[in-house]
Length: 121
Image (cartoon, rainbow, N blue to C red; front, side, top):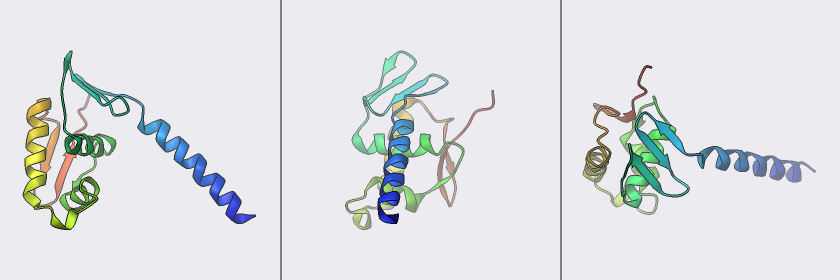
């Protein structure tokens, strides 16, 4: 039946998405493993809060694309985004940049949001 086919297709899509999402990501000196929750800059391990991990995941998965402030707030603070001050995102971005030393990678797109810059090789 159509409902069974739809359920099977959705299951396969979820499996593919989870397999791709769980793969460790290497960008220059950065090594991010979101499944093991380990984050390295060079050989130095970096401890990130849960909010910083969510933000980093969104930025890295959408490399080269600008994420709007509203979209980031909604996707990071899913359980109460309407009560989160816009300044909370700015503070989280600053902390993430400082911890990773990623000032050249996390770009502010004024009036819109943020993006993880793809470096030309």
